[in-house]
Image (cartoon, rainbow, N blue to C red; front, side):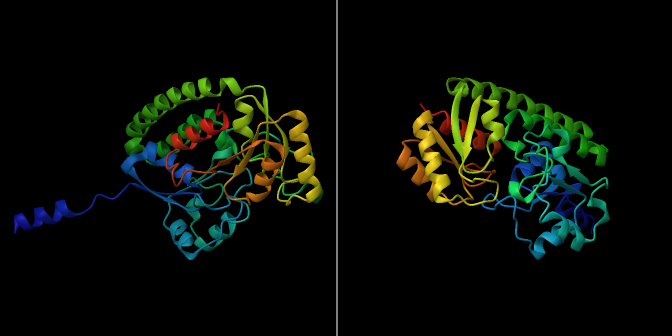
Length: 291
């Protein structure tokens, strides 16, 4: 009988201490890097989703209902889809203001905050550009914030969270040095973007965005606007057009074909071939500063 009890005891799985839901894949990767097996991590959006418009599903409600911690990007990026899910999940632990709610945008400096707001400006974000993920120097800060949050909510594993963060931060510091060297030749150049998605990345490495294919955020380009960009690229000898993977690519390809610029298709989150944060930035650096 004792042997049977011991077998049963050791066959019971050791469950993670916390249930964490991340709004986006990159947040999920950061949680895994800090928590390892001390948290069960679920991610709502996928790498193929437009981060502004994630279609709610019943499974997301169940995810949130079981969560101890919800971590969002913030900056208004999830404003259209996280609140309705929270309303249906009925989990007081993870509502805004609760201990289990973490808005990462509160811990970074957002750029391009509009001086005023009106419909004439398109779909602008009142808090500023929410795509701060793409400044790689923000990543260690985000990891540290997650480490402190996990340590507060699960103090029994605080030392492990801190140790995991130290390993991650050291590795990321080495990567930052590599990326600085690769990007150095491209400083003081210019680029066109479809959407102001990669502004933090370009600003970090001294590349100026001179135009966007969207005349305004969320507004599709007209023929006149497209021709104006082609002329500007020819006149200013702009070398690259950055295209994200969730907007239509045909306009960028047409502009590149007519102007001689190079179109660069970049992922907007972790997933697919860029299945780690390292690879996401490795690809971005290699393609943007290709020589």
